[in-house]
Figure (cartoon, one colour):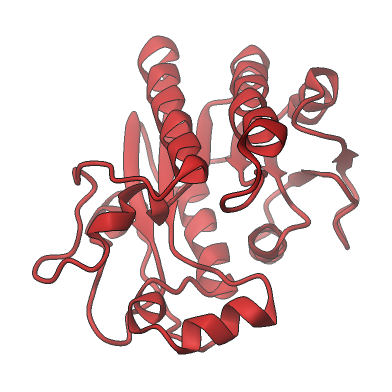
Length: 244
């Protein structure tokens, strides 16, 4: 697929910076959107997900959307998660449809199947029943449902990716060192960048798809990565603690 201009929301975040770097390395035209400017990104809109005018400015002329911007983890639901992860999703998807964006790549989370993550045997498939960790994960299920609605109603390609854990702080990295399961769902910045680049470049039409994205497990495969390989050509290269 020729992706055209790619809008990356959350471009200044831990994963966002890795995605921007990989897209730049592959020569794709891109625009950033975040609360603060993203280093080395000339085409940048600074704004919030709760400002529909700023979101519309960022979306203008884009053909592909990588939506990473969100309030992380279990922050205050009413003050932070609802405005950014629910109302913000509404603004982003509506603006994408109005701007004629053809492919949406939406960052969900492995936390939507949290209580099944320790199950031994076959890796969790994309058809696993949702068992969300808490409000953050419940909001990610809203994102997935909204993405499906837009794929069905408007014929857009929509990929909802349930991301593994890409630690943002030294404290999170130290926590991961103590948890075998966390090392198995680790997602390195390098693999994150490669995943989203693959999702941008994959041939379509894709319709609506749910996939998982992690790096290579240390102990055993918790999530089924085969759909990401088959549909998008994604193969993880790193393993905990590479890229930490």
